[in-house]
Image (cartoon, rainbow, N blue to C red; front, side):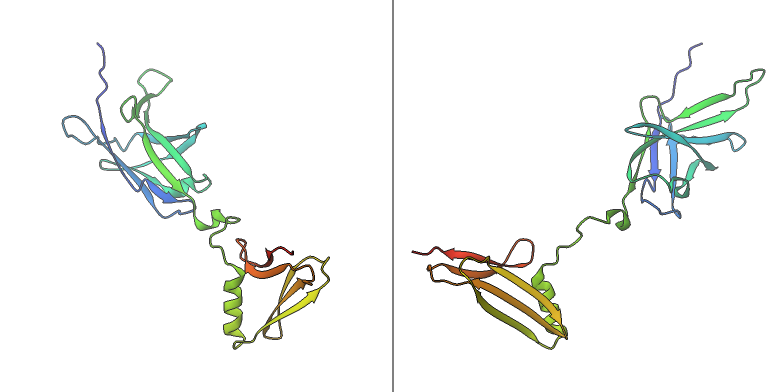
Length: 206
């Protein structure tokens, strides 16, 4: 007699959570084509076999309550953020056979998907917000009671145009070193894409 596998609809609650969150649960239930919920036998053993795009990862415990298969996110605490898939294996002793019997959920050709998202600590090293020097200047001005001091000094025409910035004694000092303009060159301070002050040539000498 050929056994026909039933086609299950899969319902998943809590299938997305952040890495390191150990207080949540993935709750899975299966419904057959007649609308009947799969009710697991609490005397059997249930395990979740988990994989990602790289392959099989391992087995994780499953608790059953009525028609719900429940997996604590605590068991996934060491997994990195990623997309995962799982099957639930129901295992029980086979009569007269050393090899236990097994039922694998869900329907052949399908799996249960879940996602572990990165938390903010996983983003260390990434630029969360770009704070330019102007932001620092603005804050320094507020904290220093508008004690912003800008100095401009002339250096030799063969020297490099530079900007020095320093916060000292409650005052914010910005010093622009401008090459002498005997050759007619004109320089102008500006804030670059890196958020810092720079000096650029805006007019060549004649």
